[in-house]
Every structure is written in C-alpha cells, then in structure tokens.
Length: 306
Image (tube, rainbow, N blue to C red; front, side, top):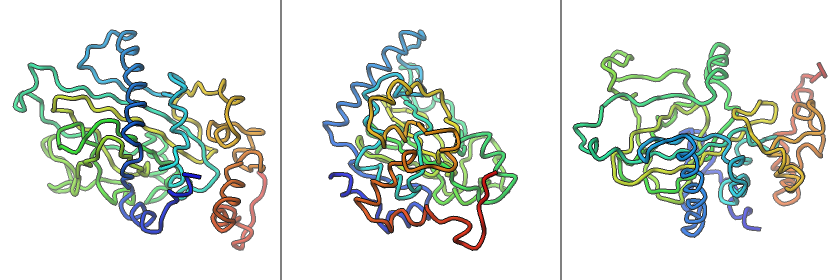
C-alpha cells in the first residue's frame, strides 16, 4: 500500500513543529503533474471565458473539486495525506480547496522597472477565526493546515514564489526590520524567504504560518492547487459542492468530505463518523491513534455533554 511508504517521520514532524511548514519533494510524478496541469488548464480556460478575464489576469478559484471531480484524487494523495493525519490525527476533514493561476505580466509591464514594487500581502489563514483566537492566547492553536501542490516550477525567485517566515506560526504578530513597523510599504518582515520548489513538489503548512503570494515577473504562469484540512468541528471555508459525491466514494473520503451521522458526530464522533481512525489503527497500529483518543477524564478531568 503506497501510502504506508510516506508516513510522517520524526524528522519531518520536528521540521514542521519548528518551521510551520515542510516541503515534500516529488509529491507528484512528472506524469501526474501533466495530468493535473491539463485539468487546471481546462478549468482556467473555462473561468476566463465565463468571467471575461484576459490571459494576464490572476485566477483564484475556490471549491476546485466542485468544478472538476477529477481533482478529488488529491484529497488523500499517498505522498502527502499520511503527513496530514500524522500531524493532525484522524478526526479531520477537507474544509477548503483552491486553485490559483498567476500569469506572467503583460508584455508592456515585463520590465522589472515597470512592475510596481510594494509589500507582499502577509497573512495567516482563516481571517476572522485568527483574529478572534488572537484575543485568547499566543500562539493560537493550529486548527487547520494546507497542502499546496505546485504544478509549475518556482525554483527561480520572481516566479510567483510562495513566501514564508519560518517559525512564525508561534507568534501572533510579524516583526519588521525598522522599529518593528513597516515604514514605506516595501519592506518585508524579518526572516521572510521565498520557497523555491519544482513542479511536482508540495508544501504542507500550518495555517498560523505568516505567508504571502508574490508577483510573477517571469514569462510562464504559476499554477498551484491548495487542499485545506481542519478538525471536523470547523465549518468549511468555501461553499463545497461535494454532496453529490458522498454516495460515490469510500468511507474515508466520505469522512473527508464532511459527512457525519449527525451534527454532533463532528464533535463526539462514532466509529462510522471517522473511519480513518480504524484504518490507521489497522495498518499503522493503535499507538498511532492513542494521542487523539485521550480525554480530559484520562488526564484527570472530565468531559461533559453540553
């Protein structure tokens, strides 16, 4: 079973805990990149035609599975999914999908001097949730993470690189080079770096990680698919048109698509709500699910149904 060859290692867990992200090299083979790239190109062409977008407009589309069911296969992709539940445990769901196509600049804007220089759009994911949790504690709890599948090469800086501040998932504020404040709208946060990954690589990142998209100044488009996973009690971030798929998929995929025996099954799951638990216990071992089965009662407290 291929997925068992890609279990989260201790070294990967340490890297993720320290940096808030990790790179999975060759998450997709060259042939798989070609397959998914063709699907993305179909969606991209359709959306540009529907919305009257030019070849140089950026496309940012949510609920990608709802737009093309062939993208469902990435929901439990062998090279990445074991890392996801290795970090988060089994009571998880897919709560967000996104496709971003960042074309090169228009020819008349291709000169580096003509491309406006401004600060990147630094953020943590989930917007209002992060703002509310910010009032409660630092660092905030993780709650969700994303897998970004890069279908085009971003090894050169300027190719629409995904920028990160390593370790920033442990802080609720960014730190800036001048008096802790951005002064002229151009400086980037301290320790910010561009990730430089190949087509077929994936980046798994904590939603708390401060990150930003960057302009594509080169001559080829940047194309990325994002799959967001959260605990099952979190509401989906996008309108996911996946209900028609629930009777067509296996139990684990049905769990990931948000199905539950009841609303309370997302808070107090029965075995049929989280078949991923039984699968992990059978194929990896009970020790792999024990940390996620601990209750307050076992730790000296008590959980009540309220």
